[in-house]
Image (cartoon, rainbow, N blue to C red; front, side, top):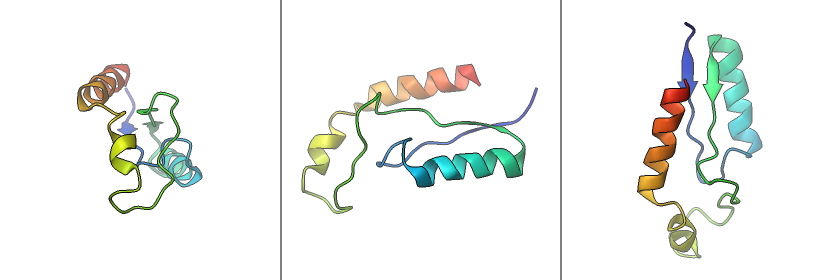
Length: 79
């Protein structure tokens, strides 16, 4: 069995080039499988200001903690 890393994306999501680049670098330099889940399930990531307000809370409400926890459990089972 090999090694694996479950990399959780920030609010900008798994499609962020910085996040994907980090996943690729981890895979190469650590010689491991890197799983970068789409916790937003196809929804776009947050691209607004990093401050409170401005719709962030509304966007965040679309990511129920129970669903995120379920997705993460599935990821760990996959790995």
